[in-house]
Length: 415
Image (cartoon, rainbow, N blue to C red; front, side, top):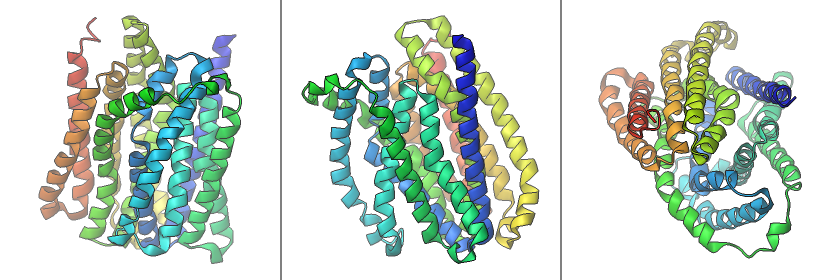
């Protein structure tokens, strides 16, 4: 009975994630079709900057709290969540005003400032709710929140842009985004109301928060370094060329990133909590079997999805009928290749994470930024815009090799 329920939950989860991905695909295509390339490029910069600032706001505290909540009695979850919220209140108070520097130094135009801060706060809240639900083994709720946050509003936006030409501008897209992420937060709070609240009578555990900050600090340095790859690449392309060429890059990267999103839904969200639990029980056999299962599923899905993207993109480019996308078609191949290597590198990554081999993860992520930076500097002399995805490919290859070697050295696979 439990097996049937698990299969049904996975199918429903995949259906929600699949619908979300399909919606995001539709939005990418519709934006490319109906918005001017410069607006698509600006949307890509805005989106990447929001995601980068999310990393600083969250301080990677979830790397500590997720492992804690998995091994903590359910009756104490509410108190842990409250204490986590106390910490996030502090980060928001400090970092959100500091984010004004993004506009002060001209990285983004001032006309977007009133969209930036509400979306930043709401996205962070929805992201943490999603991570929490995955950690407490509620993947269906997590997928539902993700659908509202990324899928539902994308469907609405795509339809409206298609039917009503007067709405074909960036501000409408941002308004729809804000509406969608607000709905996701509301749904997340509905689920959290079911938690046992008796532990809220306990005082705020400042020692737990301090311990989390100490544990998360090296992670946030590593994450900001790694996330910088997905932010600086867009700014670098804008510097090398223009917002119009950036639009093509954003379009192709959006397609490639869908591969990672699908893998997260179909593989990672199910298997990495099992890896952590197996390590907690010191069940080496279970750990190795789960890691092997993750490896097989990740490799097969990555190859299948990459091939499908390359085959299907041609007719879509023809339908969009804008020269900037067809002229820079080579960007797609390199972004797909780089994403595939990134996906496979997540296998040893999750193994190291479950084993608490944090130093190996942190070291590799911090080293990734200078590797990307110097590779791009060298390659941009000959390859111009292609230097960005080629540099990403080299960087992700380094991460794959480094993490695999560190996993082997941990002796977990040889025990």
